[in-house]
Structures are given as structure tokens and as C-alpha cells.
Image (cartoon, rainbow, N blue to C red; front, side, top):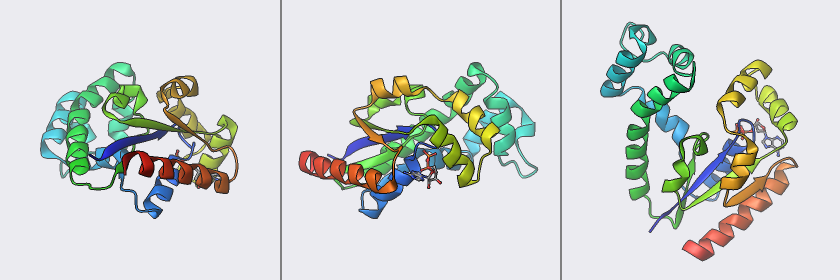
Length: 197
Ligand code: ADP
């Protein structure tokens, strides 16, 4: 039985960095954000999104314009829940199929907003990456996709580190050097290969 290990944490905590480390040692990794993005191309999803948020979230060819959708869907908790009701079942189905195709002792499911939707229930364990907020802000801005304002916007939509600590089975501390993070990842890998292998 392949175990599902969720990898989560706030923006800029180092999830993608950790995911890349697992990939490097041949542990299968599924990025649920990416799965979610691909789901937006589905015909049924597009129709449901149009019904919920209006035709102007689509371009002339009928494809979802992600920025326009985000502006409408992340307006408040009600609209966010509406988006989740449409996307979650599709994402979960894809995750289930992907896990069934794996033969490794365990897989990593990178899920930035897992805890916000009580997703930990379907996982065998939850790993949370943590780093000081100021460091996360600095690293995100340096990464270059988001400025400080965008960072704050995303931060507002995510749960806080107190809740993450409560829900975590394992914590990766990433306020230090990458070398220290690698060591923690390798230790967990060895433990899971022993436990699940
Ligand atoms: P997340 O996926 O959680 O948003 P990333 O893994 O993309 O976070 O990390 C944010 C940025 O910080 C990236 O540019 C990454 O290369 C960098 N980073 C992550 N961990 C460290 C670290 N320990 N030291 C220095 N830079 C780091």
C-alpha cells in the first residue's frame, strides 16, 4: 500500500524546494496546485465556473482566464467555497488515480492549502514546512513571481502557523541554510522507507 504524505506550509516556506528534494531521490511527487490548474481546462469544470462566476472569466475560445477567475473567486469565503465545491471533487479524483498508479512505499502530495480544506483526513501523514515570516517574505520577493503586496494577499487566504503546528505530524524547519533542510528531508525519507518500505 502506497502511503500518502502531504507536504504543506505557507507561501514562501519552502514547499517547492522540499518537493524538488524528494523528486531528486526518486520519491513520486504530485503538485496539487498544478493538478488544479489543469482541471480548469475541463469542459464540465469550465461550464460550472461560468455558471458560478460569469462568462467574462472565459476568453474568446472558452478557456478560463486564471487572473479573472481569481479576482472573483477569492473575493470572500463564500466565493472561495463556491470555487472549491467545483474544483475539489475533480482534483481529488485525479489524485486518487495518480496514487493508484504508484508503486513506491510512499508518495508526496504537495498541497499548499490542504489544511484550509481539512484535507489532512485523507492523508497518512502531514509534513509542514516552516520558516520565519520575514524570511518567507524576503525569499518570495527574491524568487520574483510576487511582490510584497501579492505576498500579503496570499498570506491572508492561508491558515496561520499555529494551526499548521497543531495539524503537523512532521515539521521541517526552514529558517536556516538549505543544507539543514536537506538533512531533515533525508532523515524523514529514511524513516518512511523503514516504516513503509
Ligand atoms: P513555497 O513553494 O513554499 O512557496 P519555495 O520552495 O518556492 O516556497 O521557496 C521560496 C523561495 O525561497 C525560493 O526561491 C527558494 O529557492 C528559496 N528558499 C527556500 N528555502 C531556502 C533556504 N533554506 N535558504 C535560502 N533560500 C531558500
